Image 1 (cartoon, rainbow, N blue to C red):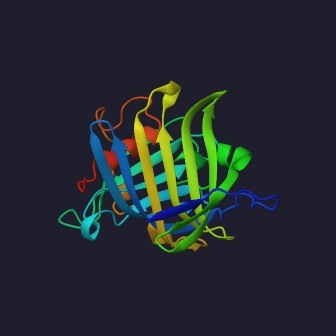
Image 2 (image 1 turned 90 degrees about the horizontal axis):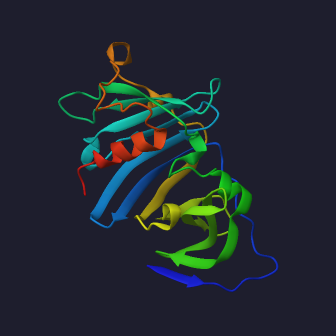
Length: 231
C-alpha cells in the first residue's frame, strides 16, 4: 500500500549516495502491453570488484542465474555467465557470452545511474507497507530526450532503497514499466560465492542464438529475465 505526500520544503533531503558494494533480495514486476513478467533473485553488486550477479532465483532457486564481470580496462564491456539453478544440473555454468556497450551503473537494479547522480530531485514523502520513505524522481535521457522516467523510494533519512519504478518510453513510445522492490538490503562486500561460476573451467561460449553478435549487457539481462518461469 502506498500513501504519498508531495509537500516540498526548503530543507528537502538530497538524493542519497549508496554504497558501491551491497546485496538485496529483489522482487521485480515488468508490465508490457502483451503481459507481465516477474523476477525474484538475490542481487549482489560490487562496483569495486566490477561484478554483479543474480543468484537463487525463483522457486527454491531453481531458475537460471547470472554473473556479470564488467571490464575496468578496455571500455564498458563485460563477460556474462549463465548458470543453471539448483536442481539436476547442480548449479553448473551453462554458457558464457560477451556483453557490449553498457556500464555497471546502467542496469535496472543499479543505485548509481548517471542521471540519478546528476539530477534526482526530492518530490515528497510516502509510506510503503508501513515504511516511511523519501521519494526521488529523475529522467534517463539520450541527449535531451527522456527514454525512461524513474522514481526511487528510500527509507526516510537513510541510504536504504525500498522500491524503484521505471516507466519505459524510448523516443516517446510507451513500452511498459518495471517495479523493483528491495528487501534485506545490506551494505558491504558481498561474499565471494555470490560471483563464483561453478564449472567455469569447462564452460563454453554460447552459440549465435544464445550470444547474439553485438548484444549489450542490458539486452543479455533482459533475455535472462525472460528465462524466468514465474510470470
